[in-house]
Length: 402
Image (cartoon, rainbow, N blue to C red; front, side, top):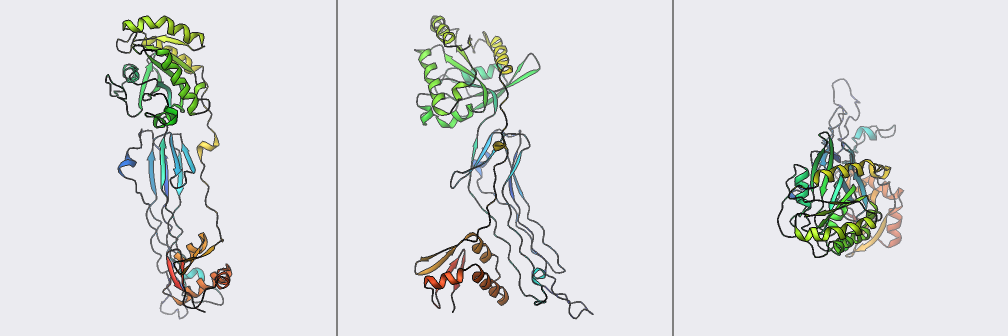
């Protein structure tokens, strides 16, 4: 604000215009009560609050209200324009600020000096930053159930936990990962994720492809469920392992318990000895169950718990905690012709132009001094600007005068 003291008995009161308040920032917070990013499908524009105007008597305006967006653990944040990685939120209560609010403009009190004791100069607030973000969720679970479509993954999850995924006798019943909590020995708990069915070429995006393979990266142990009613369960097992190996480094190295499902069916009974022999010969632990009847399921979960106990917890790296770096100040600029006019581009000069009050002669003169000090005036003259030419700086349209 541009303001001056006007009290009785104070003939030379001087400037007292206060600063504007800073704008609110945009942050993300991990909240375990959320398990999907569905809310961001329904609303994809969010805005923090504006800072309030400064007042007389050097009163600073209120800060804008910051915006805190809650996301589930396992959320990755990317810059939506260039896909640059910004943050990986994996811990309950973890918080990261993606965009800081713009700085509040300075009141005329800030510009007082021994040679200018009554400045009629102030600044507008700095424009707030804006950005498109890409949010991606990688579920965090102890155990991931993988296998071809219709192998019985959802049925197994519903048997070992209270989760109630959609179950039907056709492929791709599960269209999104499901989480369930299995209880072992009345007190031990395991978080289990049912990863939707994979098909050949999934690592290249076929079928449900990358939509769900990424969730396997965050699991510690895999249950590789084989369909006992398939024409060749061993071929399915080899195909899924190939897709795991093709998708990400070391994904195929995760501890894997191969589970032969639907042992209650005659075809599965006939296949079981050959499948067991081949799997164990390859060095993988093997179990046979019927998720529908519950046969062997309890023993299976004890083996899964034992496998988990022997698998070390993944280390949390610094890169997963915070990877936000503020943009540096940059006085560089570019001058170009644009539809017969001139365009001056540069982070700092565009910010100064946006914060300038063009209604006051002193602020306009100050902006001209900034152009001179940054070398922009000289560069425009050397480029051939002439009297009356239009010069665009950010959102501002100015007229050049010799």
